Length: 325
Image (cartoon, rainbow, N blue to C red; front, side, top):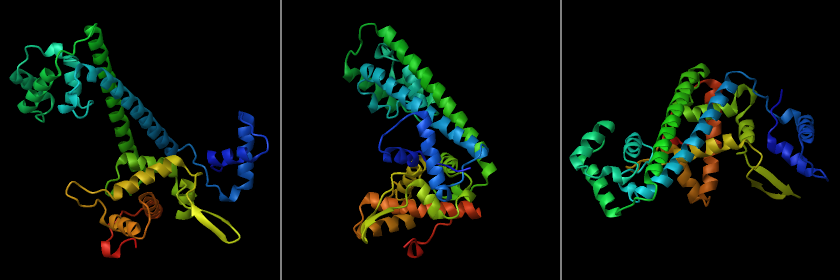
């Protein structure tokens, strides 16, 4: 059984004289690609633990999308009642913020509240992360905003409270699926989380797209599958290598995001991965653009990931003087 990338069948569909788009012709395009490219296609993943992991990853992505949408809706309500709320709650969806919006969806409910009373209420909720000073900032910001009460304010407040409950629900669902992923990953005996900065979620995304590494004979095949390996366009000996647009976009995006993480600097100015950071700086010095340098890092990461999965070996941070040169 082979894995046919949708981009390949789409390219075949566009190449025929008369463009068609229906289920039966889509199936014919997939069949044509499978016949013509059989030896180049990777083996398909069977419905085993990799398929189950991919379902967990997809569910997490869907939950995250709904969670963000609800936070945006909550922002629409809160920014009317509290125009300056960013002064005291940078993240509208944090537990302390959600508690505040639930109990004080509009400033009218804060009337008569002293700093000490508000602090006594919020500090335990925040597990002592909140302070009396922050409560003073809240009351000062509310006073500076003036009267923000609108018509039908009680009904507006109920909308805010309802959104708070919805956001909490999705937070709980995300925590549950994250736990399921964390509990499921040991079955794969995967060493990828030994790479600094690689979380269980990132490991799950990689494994769900790559599948059983044995279906790829070498790292080049994985790079081709991800669409990270450059494609040569040439004629009469002249041409150039260009970025492929036919790879697995989800895998490509995960690797590219990981490449960005590898060159990030901490608050103290220290690189997360000194070897990758030094390699990145050398590529920039050679005239590469930042996106081009990140693609090169992505390709290096694929080789590392392939070797780690193939040999079940942990990641060893290379010394900068002996790095990826």
